[in-house]
Length: 98
Length: 140
Image 1 (cartoon, one colour):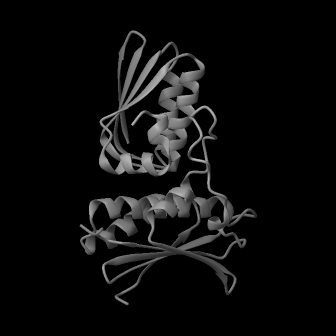
Image 2 (tube, each protein chain N blue to C red):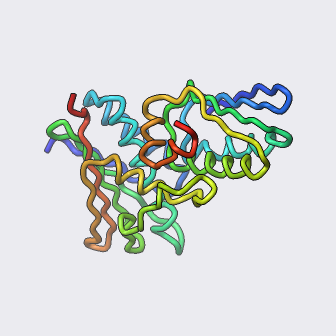
């Protein structure tokens, strides 16, 4: 998986490219642990990532809780059809505002 | 049944890439739709990773993935010689809870249950056997 970031003040966008699975989810966790300090609005861009397993969902939920507890927000952008199905099947579409 | 393909490897999470390549090969060989391909690969990932976590608490072991396609449906069966464990017996998570109320885990097996057409667990001849089946194409 390739992760790239754009930071603008307290806004951080992470672009994901590849598959967010059991083997790659720790890479996203490590990047977020490093970059989230001071961030108020986090956007995860899934334009090039349409495969998300439960390991990826765990990272998203943990980050959601972390952002909300700190008074921040998290958004998922450019969600594809397959990932949208996963969010819907697990009820996370409501959590992430779809 | 058409030809059955078999992959047997050490039951380690690092083998996931190999397992997913095996699944992709069989599905691509049979012209699987994009949606079914993603759901089958995700289901196999969840079941395999779960197995590597729970089958061999005392040490190393093996995992065998069997795959076949018949009547436009793919069947994958994960077999191991570890501790008897039925992942399908696990209670489903409450997916209506808010993000703040939810635990962060427990979605994997539930996700598999929501996307497969058929699943079956049995413990036979000293082995766990978890079968999952899904159509390669959904009805129009």
